[in-house]
Image (cartoon, rainbow, N blue to C red):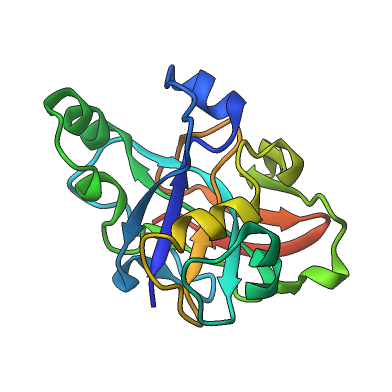
Amino acid sequence: MKIICIGRNYLDHAKELNNKVPEKPMFFMKPETSLLLKNRPFYYPGFSKEIHYETEIIIKIDKLGKHIDEKFAHRYYSEIGLGIDFTARDLQKKCKEKGHPWEIAKAFEHSAPVSEHFINKKDLPDTVNFRLELNENTVQNGNTNDMIFSVDKLISYISQFFTLKIGDLIFTGTPAGVGQVKIGDNLKGYIENKLMFDFDIK
């Protein structure tokens, strides 16, 4: 299975990091070893002193497809989850400065916590609210209507480059409010008012 992550898909997040707004979807990959499941704790890695959370709606692909027309993209997923794209911001900054790839800052072990369950999109409104609580305080609020590129557009675009397979996950981008985690923190993520994940930083 593939983990495909979309960068800069919310205007306010692009602005908070002083990044240019993309004209086309930009994406990167995480390996399967990035997954962190079942609300297991995230252990702060020794190679970074600045791990940031980025809360994202996740789309789970449930139909094989390539070169998917945007108008048919909705047929290729039926469930929505929530996750975090952990980023070693200090390493990412160095990669950007040197023009290096970002994998060292994005694709490390357990950098992709994923909610234990997914919700059928039929049970959700057309535009989905989600949020992250850090130690019981809301730090990120998002709505899928604020995406620069819609889910259907993302599926269509990605499928032009490689086949999407059943079980592939698409992290659809994060809204503003990203920030640093530290040992002892607790993270809770919600879609609408449904708790999707609850885990600790150790």
